[in-house]
Length: 426
Image (cartoon, rainbow, N blue to C red; front, side, top):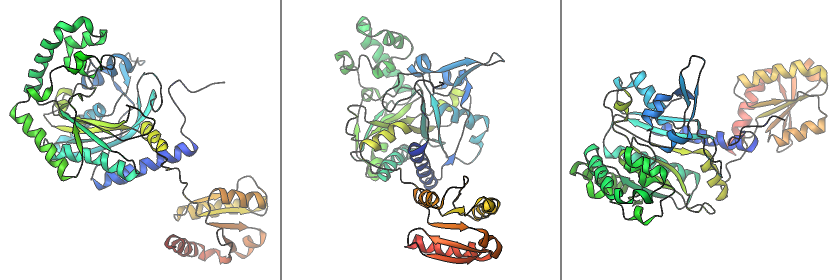
Protein backbone atom coordinates (compact mmCIF):
# COMPACT_ATOMS: atom_id res chain seq x y z
CA UNK A 1 0.00 0.00 0.00
CA UNK A 2 1.32 3.43 -0.97
CA UNK A 3 1.87 5.75 2.00
CA UNK A 4 2.73 9.42 2.44
CA UNK A 5 6.44 10.32 2.71
CA UNK A 6 8.02 10.46 6.16
CA UNK A 7 7.61 13.84 7.81
CA UNK A 8 4.41 14.78 5.95
CA UNK A 9 0.73 14.52 6.86
CA UNK A 10 -2.73 14.65 5.29
CA UNK A 11 -5.12 17.51 6.02
CA UNK A 12 -8.75 16.40 6.28
CA UNK A 13 -11.62 16.23 8.78
CA UNK A 14 -11.02 18.12 12.04
CA UNK A 15 -7.49 19.06 10.94
CA UNK A 16 -8.89 20.70 7.80
CA UNK A 17 -11.44 22.63 9.89
CA UNK A 18 -8.62 23.89 12.15
CA UNK A 19 -6.35 24.92 9.27
CA UNK A 20 -9.15 26.73 7.42
CA UNK A 21 -10.26 28.44 10.64
CA UNK A 22 -6.73 29.74 11.25
CA UNK A 23 -6.38 30.90 7.66
CA UNK A 24 -9.69 32.81 7.84
CA UNK A 25 -8.71 34.33 11.18
CA UNK A 26 -5.30 35.36 9.85
CA UNK A 27 -6.86 36.79 6.68
CA UNK A 28 -9.29 38.87 8.76
CA UNK A 29 -6.43 40.10 10.97
CA UNK A 30 -4.28 40.99 7.96
CA UNK A 31 -7.14 43.06 6.52
CA UNK A 32 -7.04 45.09 9.73
CA UNK A 33 -3.38 45.88 9.04
CA UNK A 34 -3.95 46.70 5.34
CA UNK A 35 -1.64 43.85 4.30
CA UNK A 36 -1.77 42.25 0.83
CA UNK A 37 -1.79 38.48 0.27
CA UNK A 38 1.19 37.03 -1.65
CA UNK A 39 1.70 33.55 -3.06
CA UNK A 40 5.07 32.59 -4.53
CA UNK A 41 6.17 29.37 -6.29
CA UNK A 42 6.75 26.30 -4.13
CA UNK A 43 10.10 25.82 -5.90
CA UNK A 44 12.52 28.52 -6.99
CA UNK A 45 16.10 28.86 -8.20
CA UNK A 46 18.47 27.33 -5.64
CA UNK A 47 20.57 30.48 -5.83
CA UNK A 48 17.73 32.52 -4.30
CA UNK A 49 17.82 30.54 -1.06
CA UNK A 50 21.58 30.02 -1.00
CA UNK A 51 22.09 33.78 -1.32
CA UNK A 52 19.02 35.06 0.50
CA UNK A 53 18.82 32.64 3.41
CA UNK A 54 22.59 32.23 3.79
CA UNK A 55 25.12 29.53 2.98
CA UNK A 56 26.13 29.19 6.65
CA UNK A 57 22.63 28.43 7.93
CA UNK A 58 21.59 24.88 8.78
CA UNK A 59 18.58 25.39 6.50
CA UNK A 60 20.75 25.70 3.38
CA UNK A 61 23.69 23.51 4.40
CA UNK A 62 21.63 20.58 5.68
CA UNK A 63 17.88 20.90 5.23
CA UNK A 64 16.95 22.09 1.72
CA UNK A 65 15.37 19.83 -0.88
CA UNK A 66 17.54 20.58 -3.93
CA UNK A 67 17.08 19.02 -7.37
CA UNK A 68 17.78 19.54 -11.07
CA UNK A 69 14.91 19.77 -13.54
CA UNK A 70 14.97 18.44 -17.13
CA UNK A 71 16.58 21.68 -18.26
CA UNK A 72 19.48 21.03 -15.86
CA UNK A 73 18.44 24.01 -13.73
CA UNK A 74 19.17 23.94 -9.99
CA UNK A 75 15.90 24.28 -8.09
CA UNK A 76 14.94 24.13 -4.42
CA UNK A 77 11.65 23.53 -2.64
CA UNK A 78 11.18 26.69 -0.60
CA UNK A 79 12.44 26.20 2.98
CA UNK A 80 11.04 29.56 4.19
CA UNK A 81 8.92 32.41 2.84
CA UNK A 82 10.89 35.64 3.08
CA UNK A 83 13.35 35.08 0.21
CA UNK A 84 10.54 34.30 -2.25
CA UNK A 85 8.54 37.36 -1.20
CA UNK A 86 11.64 39.55 -1.62
CA UNK A 87 12.30 38.05 -5.07
CA UNK A 88 8.69 38.83 -6.06
CA UNK A 89 9.00 42.35 -4.63
CA UNK A 90 12.07 42.96 -6.83
CA UNK A 91 10.96 41.13 -9.98
CA UNK A 92 7.58 42.88 -10.09
CA UNK A 93 9.16 46.27 -9.28
CA UNK A 94 6.86 46.77 -6.31
CA UNK A 95 9.42 49.12 -4.82
CA UNK A 96 8.18 51.67 -7.38
CA UNK A 97 4.75 51.67 -5.72
CA UNK A 98 3.80 53.63 -2.65
CA UNK A 99 5.72 52.27 0.32
CA UNK A 100 5.60 50.80 2.88
CA UNK A 101 4.18 47.62 1.39
CA UNK A 102 2.87 45.02 3.84
CA UNK A 103 2.65 41.44 2.56
CA UNK A 104 1.45 38.20 4.12
CA UNK A 105 1.62 34.59 3.00
CA UNK A 106 0.25 31.22 4.09
CA UNK A 107 1.50 27.98 2.59
CA UNK A 108 3.73 24.91 2.66
CA UNK A 109 7.50 25.00 3.21
CA UNK A 110 9.97 22.10 3.01
CA UNK A 111 12.98 21.17 5.13
CA UNK A 112 14.74 17.86 5.54
CA UNK A 113 14.87 17.67 9.33
CA UNK A 114 14.09 15.02 11.92
CA UNK A 115 10.30 14.79 12.27
CA UNK A 116 9.09 15.41 15.83
CA UNK A 117 6.06 16.79 17.67
CA UNK A 118 4.85 19.86 15.81
CA UNK A 119 7.68 19.70 13.27
CA UNK A 120 7.47 18.13 9.81
CA UNK A 121 9.42 18.02 6.56
CA UNK A 122 6.48 19.61 4.79
CA UNK A 123 4.98 22.23 7.06
CA UNK A 124 2.77 25.31 6.79
CA UNK A 125 3.87 28.82 7.67
CA UNK A 126 2.06 32.10 8.11
CA UNK A 127 4.42 34.99 7.51
CA UNK A 128 4.35 38.76 7.28
CA UNK A 129 6.82 41.13 5.61
CA UNK A 130 6.86 44.95 5.58
CA UNK A 131 9.03 46.77 3.03
CA UNK A 132 9.98 50.43 2.81
CA UNK A 133 10.23 51.64 6.40
CA UNK A 134 13.30 51.61 8.65
CA UNK A 135 11.34 53.22 11.46
CA UNK A 136 11.52 51.28 14.76
CA UNK A 137 7.74 51.75 15.02
CA UNK A 138 7.35 49.16 12.25
CA UNK A 139 9.45 46.66 14.25
CA UNK A 140 7.11 47.09 17.21
CA UNK A 141 3.96 46.81 15.11
CA UNK A 142 5.20 43.58 13.50
CA UNK A 143 5.73 42.08 16.96
CA UNK A 144 2.29 43.38 17.92
CA UNK A 145 0.65 41.39 15.12
CA UNK A 146 1.86 38.12 16.65
CA UNK A 147 0.83 39.13 20.17
CA UNK A 148 -2.64 40.15 18.93
CA UNK A 149 -3.10 36.85 17.06
CA UNK A 150 -2.13 34.81 20.12
CA UNK A 151 -4.43 36.89 22.33
CA UNK A 152 -7.34 36.39 19.92
CA UNK A 153 -6.74 32.63 20.02
CA UNK A 154 -6.72 32.67 23.83
CA UNK A 155 -3.12 31.60 24.45
CA UNK A 156 -1.80 32.47 27.89
CA UNK A 157 1.63 33.45 29.18
CA UNK A 158 2.67 35.22 25.98
CA UNK A 159 6.29 36.32 26.24
CA UNK A 160 8.26 38.47 23.80
CA UNK A 161 12.06 38.09 23.71
CA UNK A 162 13.99 40.75 21.79
CA UNK A 163 17.59 41.47 20.88
CA UNK A 164 19.47 43.64 18.41
CA UNK A 165 22.18 42.71 15.94
CA UNK A 166 22.87 46.36 15.12
CA UNK A 167 23.70 47.84 11.72
CA UNK A 168 26.54 46.78 9.39
CA UNK A 169 29.19 48.67 11.32
CA UNK A 170 28.08 47.32 14.71
CA UNK A 171 27.79 43.80 13.35
CA UNK A 172 31.29 43.92 11.87
CA UNK A 173 32.72 45.12 15.20
CA UNK A 174 30.90 42.30 16.97
CA UNK A 175 32.11 39.78 14.39
CA UNK A 176 35.73 40.71 15.09
CA UNK A 177 35.15 40.41 18.83
CA UNK A 178 33.66 36.91 18.39
CA UNK A 179 36.57 35.79 16.19
CA UNK A 180 39.04 36.90 18.86
CA UNK A 181 37.01 35.30 21.66
CA UNK A 182 36.36 31.89 20.04
CA UNK A 183 39.82 31.40 18.50
CA UNK A 184 41.38 29.76 21.60
CA UNK A 185 38.33 27.47 22.00
CA UNK A 186 37.99 26.16 18.42
CA UNK A 187 38.90 22.59 19.40
CA UNK A 188 36.16 22.64 22.05
CA UNK A 189 33.42 23.48 19.55
CA UNK A 190 31.38 21.13 17.36
CA UNK A 191 32.36 20.56 13.73
CA UNK A 192 29.59 22.83 12.44
CA UNK A 193 30.76 25.69 14.66
CA UNK A 194 34.30 25.33 13.36
CA UNK A 195 32.93 25.98 9.86
CA UNK A 196 30.77 28.85 11.14
CA UNK A 197 33.85 30.45 12.69
CA UNK A 198 35.31 30.95 9.21
CA UNK A 199 32.11 32.10 7.45
CA UNK A 200 29.81 33.70 10.04
CA UNK A 201 30.84 33.53 13.72
CA UNK A 202 27.47 34.98 14.86
CA UNK A 203 25.95 31.64 13.86
CA UNK A 204 28.04 29.93 16.56
CA UNK A 205 25.76 31.55 19.14
CA UNK A 206 22.79 29.79 17.53
CA UNK A 207 24.36 26.33 17.92
CA UNK A 208 22.03 23.66 19.30
CA UNK A 209 24.91 21.31 20.26
CA UNK A 210 27.03 23.68 22.34
CA UNK A 211 24.32 26.02 23.65
CA UNK A 212 24.88 24.97 27.30
CA UNK A 213 28.65 25.18 27.00
CA UNK A 214 30.22 27.74 29.37
CA UNK A 215 32.17 29.06 26.39
CA UNK A 216 28.87 30.17 24.84
CA UNK A 217 27.55 31.70 28.05
CA UNK A 218 30.64 33.86 28.47
CA UNK A 219 30.82 35.03 24.84
CA UNK A 220 30.80 38.80 24.12
CA UNK A 221 27.33 40.41 23.97
CA UNK A 222 26.16 42.34 20.93
CA UNK A 223 24.87 45.20 23.08
CA UNK A 224 28.47 46.11 24.00
CA UNK A 225 29.41 46.69 20.33
CA UNK A 226 26.50 48.83 19.14
CA UNK A 227 27.16 52.25 17.65
CA UNK A 228 24.91 55.19 18.62
CA UNK A 229 22.55 54.73 15.66
CA UNK A 230 21.95 51.08 16.53
CA UNK A 231 21.48 51.87 20.22
CA UNK A 232 18.94 54.55 19.37
CA UNK A 233 17.02 52.19 17.07
CA UNK A 234 16.77 49.54 19.77
CA UNK A 235 15.72 52.07 22.43
CA UNK A 236 12.93 53.31 20.16
CA UNK A 237 11.71 49.76 19.54
CA UNK A 238 11.41 49.29 23.30
CA UNK A 239 9.55 52.58 23.67
CA UNK A 240 7.05 51.58 20.98
CA UNK A 241 6.53 48.17 22.56
CA UNK A 242 5.78 49.97 25.81
CA UNK A 243 3.25 52.12 23.95
CA UNK A 244 1.54 48.92 22.76
CA UNK A 245 1.54 47.56 26.33
CA UNK A 246 3.62 44.59 25.21
CA UNK A 247 5.84 43.07 27.89
CA UNK A 248 9.24 41.99 26.62
CA UNK A 249 12.54 40.58 27.82
CA UNK A 250 15.93 41.43 26.33
CA UNK A 251 17.63 38.16 25.44
CA UNK A 252 21.17 38.60 24.11
CA UNK A 253 21.30 34.96 22.94
CA UNK A 254 18.74 35.54 20.18
CA UNK A 255 20.60 35.80 16.87
CA UNK A 256 18.08 33.88 14.71
CA UNK A 257 19.07 31.14 12.31
CA UNK A 258 19.19 33.20 9.12
CA UNK A 259 22.07 35.37 7.94
CA UNK A 260 20.05 38.30 6.65
CA UNK A 261 18.88 39.87 9.93
CA UNK A 262 20.00 43.32 11.13
CA UNK A 263 18.91 45.45 14.10
CA UNK A 264 15.85 43.98 15.86
CA UNK A 265 15.41 40.21 16.17
CA UNK A 266 12.71 38.60 18.27
CA UNK A 267 10.97 35.41 19.36
CA UNK A 268 7.45 35.14 20.75
CA UNK A 269 6.52 32.25 22.99
CA UNK A 270 3.57 31.14 25.09
CA UNK A 271 3.48 29.19 28.34
CA UNK A 272 2.36 25.82 26.96
CA UNK A 273 2.17 22.80 29.26
CA UNK A 274 4.18 19.89 27.95
CA UNK A 275 6.28 21.97 25.54
CA UNK A 276 9.26 22.22 27.85
CA UNK A 277 11.84 24.70 26.56
CA UNK A 278 10.41 24.64 23.04
CA UNK A 279 7.68 27.22 23.59
CA UNK A 280 8.74 29.58 20.78
CA UNK A 281 5.82 29.82 18.34
CA UNK A 282 6.90 32.75 16.13
CA UNK A 283 10.11 34.58 15.31
CA UNK A 284 11.52 37.20 12.99
CA UNK A 285 13.35 40.47 12.73
CA UNK A 286 14.58 43.33 10.58
CA UNK A 287 16.54 42.80 7.35
CA UNK A 288 17.45 46.19 5.91
CA UNK A 289 19.93 44.92 3.29
CA UNK A 290 18.28 41.73 2.03
CA UNK A 291 16.40 43.34 -0.89
CA UNK A 292 19.63 44.92 -2.13
CA UNK A 293 21.61 41.71 -1.55
CA UNK A 294 19.20 39.67 -3.70
CA UNK A 295 19.46 42.19 -6.54
CA UNK A 296 17.00 44.98 -5.85
CA UNK A 297 17.33 48.58 -4.69
CA UNK A 298 18.13 49.53 -1.11
CA UNK A 299 14.77 48.99 0.61
CA UNK A 300 14.52 48.11 4.33
CA UNK A 301 12.32 45.27 5.54
CA UNK A 302 11.08 43.56 8.67
CA UNK A 303 8.92 40.48 9.20
CA UNK A 304 8.18 37.22 10.96
CA UNK A 305 7.00 33.67 10.39
CA UNK A 306 5.20 31.11 12.52
CA UNK A 307 4.58 27.41 11.97
CA UNK A 308 0.94 26.36 11.82
CA UNK A 309 1.59 22.83 13.11
CA UNK A 310 3.36 24.13 16.20
CA UNK A 311 0.56 26.63 16.82
CA UNK A 312 -2.15 23.96 16.41
CA UNK A 313 -0.31 21.69 18.85
CA UNK A 314 -0.09 24.55 21.35
CA UNK A 315 -3.84 25.18 21.06
CA UNK A 316 -4.52 21.47 21.59
CA UNK A 317 -2.26 21.33 24.68
CA UNK A 318 -4.07 24.37 26.11
CA UNK A 319 -7.49 22.84 25.46
CA UNK A 320 -8.47 25.59 23.01
CA UNK A 321 -10.91 24.07 20.52
CA UNK A 322 -11.15 25.69 17.07
CA UNK A 323 -12.75 22.66 15.40
CA UNK A 324 -16.31 23.96 15.62
CA UNK A 325 -18.13 22.97 12.45
CA UNK A 326 -20.01 25.66 10.52
CA UNK A 327 -23.75 24.86 10.38
CA UNK A 328 -25.27 24.02 7.00
CA UNK A 329 -28.09 26.26 5.79
CA UNK A 330 -30.12 23.66 3.89
CA UNK A 331 -30.15 19.90 3.37
CA UNK A 332 -32.27 18.57 0.49
CA UNK A 333 -33.42 15.01 -0.15
CA UNK A 334 -36.10 13.28 -2.19
CA UNK A 335 -38.76 10.66 -1.61
CA UNK A 336 -37.48 8.54 -4.51
CA UNK A 337 -34.99 8.43 -7.38
CA UNK A 338 -37.43 10.30 -9.60
CA UNK A 339 -36.69 13.63 -7.92
CA UNK A 340 -32.88 13.56 -8.36
CA UNK A 341 -32.71 15.99 -11.30
CA UNK A 342 -35.04 18.39 -9.48
CA UNK A 343 -32.96 18.16 -6.30
CA UNK A 344 -29.72 18.77 -8.24
CA UNK A 345 -31.19 21.85 -9.93
CA UNK A 346 -32.69 23.25 -6.72
CA UNK A 347 -29.44 22.76 -4.81
CA UNK A 348 -27.50 24.59 -7.51
CA UNK A 349 -29.99 27.50 -7.53
CA UNK A 350 -29.78 27.91 -3.75
CA UNK A 351 -25.98 27.76 -3.75
CA UNK A 352 -25.78 30.44 -6.42
CA UNK A 353 -28.01 32.61 -4.23
CA UNK A 354 -25.61 32.41 -1.31
CA UNK A 355 -26.82 29.44 0.75
CA UNK A 356 -24.66 26.56 2.02
CA UNK A 357 -26.38 23.44 0.71
CA UNK A 358 -25.91 19.68 0.74
CA UNK A 359 -28.07 17.19 -1.13
CA UNK A 360 -28.69 13.45 -0.94
CA UNK A 361 -26.78 11.71 -3.75
CA UNK A 362 -27.39 8.09 -2.74
CA UNK A 363 -31.18 7.75 -2.29
CA UNK A 364 -30.96 7.11 1.43
CA UNK A 365 -33.98 6.35 3.59
CA UNK A 366 -35.86 9.13 5.35
CA UNK A 367 -34.31 8.09 8.66
CA UNK A 368 -30.77 8.13 7.23
CA UNK A 369 -31.34 11.52 5.61
CA UNK A 370 -32.58 13.09 8.83
CA UNK A 371 -29.56 11.63 10.61
CA UNK A 372 -27.28 13.04 7.91
CA UNK A 373 -28.89 16.48 8.24
CA UNK A 374 -28.26 16.39 11.99
CA UNK A 375 -24.60 15.45 11.52
CA UNK A 376 -24.18 18.41 9.15
CA UNK A 377 -25.88 20.75 11.65
CA UNK A 378 -28.42 21.64 8.93
CA UNK A 379 -30.71 24.50 9.92
CA UNK A 380 -33.43 23.64 7.38
CA UNK A 381 -34.42 20.51 5.50
CA UNK A 382 -36.29 20.48 2.19
CA UNK A 383 -38.04 17.24 1.27
CA UNK A 384 -38.90 16.74 -2.39
CA UNK A 385 -41.59 14.30 -3.54
CA UNK A 386 -43.73 13.86 -6.62
CA UNK A 387 -46.37 16.28 -5.27
CA UNK A 388 -43.79 19.00 -4.57
CA UNK A 389 -42.41 18.73 -8.12
CA UNK A 390 -45.89 19.05 -9.63
CA UNK A 391 -47.31 21.78 -7.39
CA UNK A 392 -44.06 23.75 -6.96
CA UNK A 393 -44.92 24.02 -3.28
CA UNK A 394 -42.09 22.70 -1.13
CA UNK A 395 -42.03 21.24 2.37
CA UNK A 396 -39.41 23.10 4.40
CA UNK A 397 -38.61 21.89 7.92
CA UNK A 398 -36.85 23.80 10.68
CA UNK A 399 -34.43 21.13 11.91
CA UNK A 400 -34.21 22.67 15.39
CA UNK A 401 -37.87 23.38 16.22
CA UNK A 402 -39.16 20.64 13.84
CA UNK A 403 -41.76 23.13 12.57
CA UNK A 404 -42.79 22.56 8.93
CA UNK A 405 -43.70 25.18 6.32
CA UNK A 406 -45.28 24.96 2.88
CA UNK A 407 -43.39 27.38 0.65
CA UNK A 408 -43.96 28.24 -3.01
CA UNK A 409 -40.85 27.63 -5.10
CA UNK A 410 -40.86 31.25 -6.32
CA UNK A 411 -40.80 32.47 -2.70
CA UNK A 412 -38.19 30.00 -1.40
CA UNK A 413 -35.15 32.32 -1.58
CA UNK A 414 -36.98 35.13 0.18
CA UNK A 415 -38.31 32.70 2.80
CA UNK A 416 -34.87 31.25 3.58
CA UNK A 417 -33.28 34.71 3.66
CA UNK A 418 -35.79 35.84 6.24
CA UNK A 419 -35.75 32.69 8.38
CA UNK A 420 -31.96 32.28 8.40
CA UNK A 421 -31.59 35.96 9.21
CA UNK A 422 -33.95 35.53 12.15
CA UNK A 423 -32.01 32.45 13.31
CA UNK A 424 -28.72 34.39 13.23
CA UNK A 425 -30.24 37.16 15.35
CA UNK A 426 -31.48 34.59 17.86
